[in-house]
Length: 618
Image 1 (cartoon, rainbow, N blue to C red):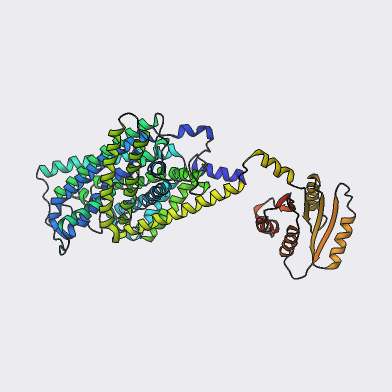
Image 2 (cartoon, rainbow, N blue to C red):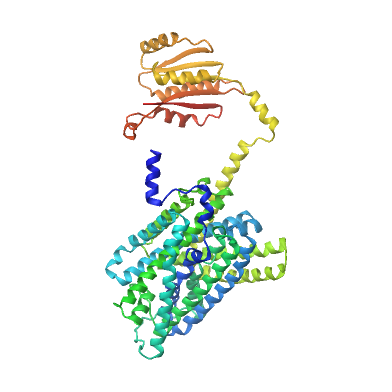
């Protein structure tokens, strides 16, 4: 059975990796860029669109006067964050990002808030990126619009499969398309500028249904800025994933951080400048990048479809940032006891497969819940990310103050500036996006923190219960334990019972009780006669039985065991040893009622009862 399972996994995921091969599954700079930077790079396909969706309904064609200044403000904020996070990479090469920084420097609850914000941010990254990718497909093929949510889920499934195959294969699988996307965007920027400056394209006049300007101009611009900050959601992924880089991992991680910032700044500003030149107005049926590519190359041209295809690919791969970062973060938090320990376990290909599957499931549910609309998901997005930014920067200020080191005052000032900037940005985002969905993110963060504290409380209680303070106490517990009675349930004197009985006799119990639940007195007397003929001399053996025609056998046996437990003297243990039939074939298992397994689950609640099963293969 296990062999067939391994063969299936080998076909699906690739050859099983041994623990010694883990070091070879780390990234260099070339492959680290697409894995950890694709989220931020892909944001150029929707961040500008989100800005215009706020400006255009209020300002009409005047929106383009303020569009590029808002974009430049976001790029400046990106530069500040990159400069701050390079210091985080140096100070925390073990990874973990905002969670570790906040937990170590600000305290447990701040760390959990940062961790919860990151978890939600990663899940939303997958959902938003896949929905935006599906939108790029439906922009080219409008007839597929009704299948948008299913397309997004299919993209998430491909990503989950790629990551389950292992780190290196996911990097190779997703790396080349990222670089091709950057190249196609640069080509579009250059061609677009040439066409515009040469006068071969004239923006068409567009009628816009402009709303009543009930909000002040500054209020509208701030809302547009808050919407555009979704371009910065992937910045922390590099600092979270430092352990996934080849040595020297901090140096390689910083190179990836710089490259990511450069690509985002160039492509985001270049595409935004083209949108401004060509006066592209977003709509519900087609993405801004699709409209821009159609204006430059023509709607049915080959390069238009190349851009759409690469946009779909980069948006899909943006979610790969979360698949690389979230399982690692969950494993770190699970090691600290805030999440189930199963999240620490590495899978078939030495990845955190449980975290990958959780991300796949939660992101898919979000896509279904919002019907594949990235515009409805985005208001939930940036607030959680900037909470982690703020706590990370504030934690770094405390870190430099506590540990000092060379030029610590300058480093603290840099992160202090980052704290102020991210704090102001967070306030703007929460105020501007609160009713649009930011409140949902804040509520989910609170719920996650409460749940994680309860998990930690449970693990701490279990550890306290199991703890033995000294070896003297351990020895005292050993010597105080009195070899007690062993109960061996029986149905008949058959091979499974004899094997179980031999096992019980070999354990050296002071008393052995053979117990049976019979449907008649005559049946009980026959069994007693058989037990009396067994030649057992090494231990005292008694035969006890209960007769019932209507009661469930398990119920009667459990009642008997409870009576025995209640009568136990101090420091004495009761042992129940049961035979269990093990079918050779899966198809035969349904023919057996699994009585032993159900009994074991019921007996687990008794602390002074030990339960053993003795398998008999049939």
